[in-house]
Amino acid sequence: MKHIIAYIKPHKLDAVTQALHQITELTGMTVLEVKGFGRGRKKELSPEEQLSDFVRHFKIEIFCKSKIVDDVLKAIEQSAYTGLRGDGKIYICSVQDALRISSGERGEKAI
Image (cartoon, rainbow, N blue to C red):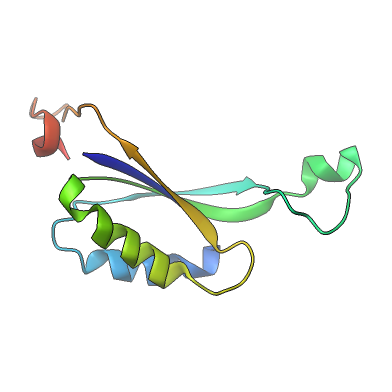
């Protein structure tokens, strides 16, 4: 099982969602509105500016079977791409176990 975390530009959420809906074995995703910053700013900011100079992104979290990870990555990468700085990032983490509270199912069945 894998945990995929993707940060994308807000205007790309609809395209990414549509692309992910095409993956039949994908059971769902969670979307959060987040703010943050990355390195490589063009100008130095004062400490006060640094506290308020955050960029808005959406964070997508997906838990899925390992066999569909490449499909999920491809869908996100292609649909979130603009070719401009700040398109986002995708992280893949291993999941040790999962438990569905309502049924007691564990592992991949719980996804």
